[in-house]
Length: 67
Image (cartoon, rainbow, N blue to C red; front, side, top):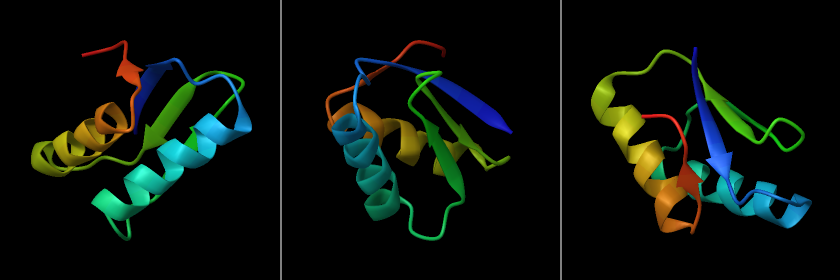
């Protein structure tokens, strides 16, 4: 499992925006957006698929704190 800490995710609207961005960029990917922990968790994915998800989160206006 890969965990991404998200900066700027503060409300249910943020959670929905991130969820929608991931769903559109990587259809069929299983993920969880945890508002309380400010994290997105995805299963083990190939690097190229993980990069697509990271870019979608950034394009939605959020920063990923871990590299």
